[in-house]
Length: 105
Image (cartoon, rainbow, N blue to C red):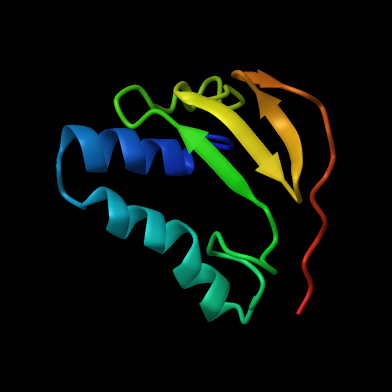
């Protein structure tokens, strides 16, 4: 039921609360690993020549809020989201900016 909360659920529940996966490993599994698996050479790391897709979150407060009855709820603890170098979430507020693009292989 977590349209926007799948990764916040992992970070809040499994990393912070249950301590079943270390934070660096969780981030790797959400970023670099899937990018490399899909052959996306310009994503998954923060460095020059990479696409600027960045989520800035508070590891102490990040949490999903979705339920099966109400799946379209934004997560807590995410202050900033940068997509292709443009602010999509600024200070916790969704900017209704469509900076992303469909990736096809």
